[in-house]
Amino acid sequence: MDGKNMSNKKRQSVLKPIMIDLEAVAEITGLSESTVQSLIRANDFPKPRKASARRSCWLLREIEEWAESRPVSDFLPPPNTAAGGRNGKPNSQIVLPITQDAQTE
View (spheres, rainbow, N blue to C red):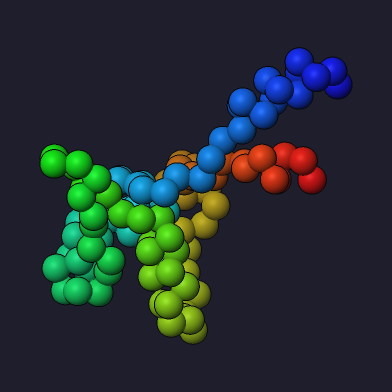
């Protein structure tokens, strides 16, 4: 690979997001937006931060820490949460960006 192509590859690297919106929080955690809001009101979930005067977001790190603090469950997931999703429709999936370090491995 020549120097020109390498510099283009470096510019195309994708960074992991720092702040995420409610829709992404719900998608990442597997909870509904209303459940996330209920947990916030009950002080059982990280509160959003002001990203600007009219926008609130969550620090991804705090969501990850919250998820890791959850107790381990002894229950198996219900059958409607399998890879096929409900009614055979595929579940939506979040594709996390690849960092530059992962690309070079």
